[in-house]
Image (cartoon, rainbow over all chains, first blue to last red; front, side, top):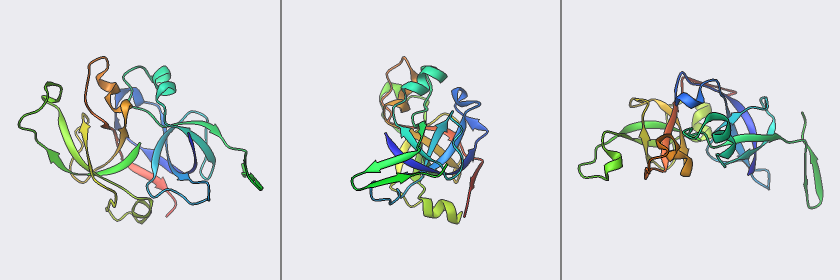
Length: 96
Length: 95
């Protein structure tokens, strides 16, 4: 799992049939030093994360398979919306 | 999933049985910088993915990597590690 910031939304008419009705968000991975990943990722969201939200993303497809069936290619899923990140020497409150 | 632009197709002469009749595309992953710039460039290291959606050259897709890429072929064994899950119509993102 890793932390990511939601940067936007994705619209796609043509997709794998199991993905119909899913909400796809564009996110950027956040590293421990605060830097962000080079390439954006597209994540499935069922929690209602908004633009700028910090979220926790799981790269395990089990939740997606449970909800969308065994044949779904969905993998990266928002599993939580982050309130606070505590690291050595600092506690970072994430704005809602 | 990552985002990638379809740069071409791969035709295999000899291949494992599972790949018969399947379409393979060459993808160039898109970096955040290029996505924001909307310049049609990728910038990532290219890879080959299996495509069942009929993505055309120049279109942007989101592709799944890893074990989950073979899920659509479940319960058959399929030796793929990248699968085009959706064709992007639009991305709503601050420039």
